[in-house]
Image (cartoon, rainbow, N blue to C red; front, side, top):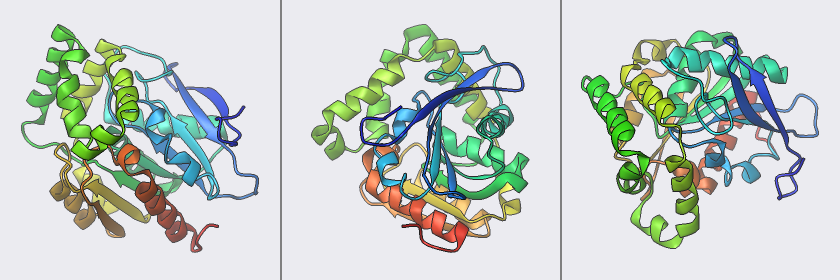
Length: 282
């Protein structure tokens, strides 16, 4: 299969340990022993978050882009969800692909899932990319996220669209890229409401801080300068808590930097690949 840009793509569904299926795309590199990278998207979106990053990465390794449970083409299984459950899902996707280990990269919610995988499967983690994310949303998070879930179920996701779009993308990006913004918002508003609510509750309850000092793999922390959802201070906390972590702040960007700044995000992932494997990929 082909993505339309000359990249060979295999689309698969992996069976999770609880019977739920997770959809993913695999972009192979025609060299044995290539670096392997898993990309995990943000809340209420899908693997299309990485569409503009992928063409900049496929020369550097074999890539899997996954739809998390309740999202995209994965099963819209009923909740409750937990961050540990989604971490296990990534391990099950690796098993389906025949991969023992990989660099795990996640944006926003995907960054939380990546941390959960790192906590539960340290022996399978080669490197970690944490983009526009946090280990913990704060003391008020359970109530805040449950309120967001209740609002969505009562009013529909279109009622949250204006709030989301200004948090996700900077003013200039929205003005200059209306089609890209529209595509993301169509994915957002098309979500299964019950799955969205279950994922909101999961994020409100997630607290991964205790695992951060145990991460031994190289880590790249990336955040938009104007990210209001998981601000620069949250990124600095990740960097300070993880021994081998770097921090990059992308000027003028907000919360979905893989869409807003694909060149910069891809470059930092390539740098991470070089740190992990001790060489810089071609």
